[in-house]
Image (spheres, rainbow, N blue to C red):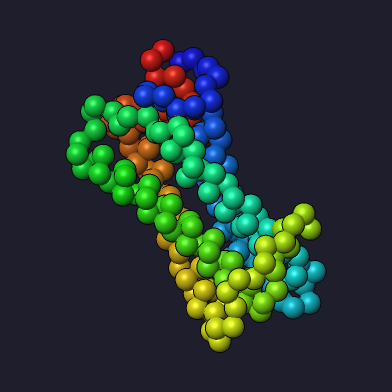
Length: 189
């Protein structure tokens, strides 16, 4: 296998920008999930009680920006064509899972925003810039958005695990190039 620089996707493989976004989002989502689970266990007098949520919010806003770019990038640089060996079910389930992951991720990010701005305060992103509170005043906004945020966080983790298992299935059982394409290898070599 040969590793060559290719920024945009082509018909047979993903380009470096798509690969970078994919793996960066995966790492950040799992990191945010772990941070979220940890920070809800903190007591008021814990030194991280106020810092952890601020970090979580800041990374969430930056992740939203990356995800918005990711959607735009899919139009600029469409994904490689599905392999000819894929069944109709594989092609359809791949599209459905990708769309679900996008919808869930954006819903998690929006619900996080609604939790963070329920009190009318803007979100400070690492003191670089602020995101204003646009939707406030609903009596249960933070609680409702918090429930949605929690369940969708678990859903995206479980769905991404299934996504990873599918990639391993393609690699080890089907012996096709699906995983190699997502790792940046040129399947033609």
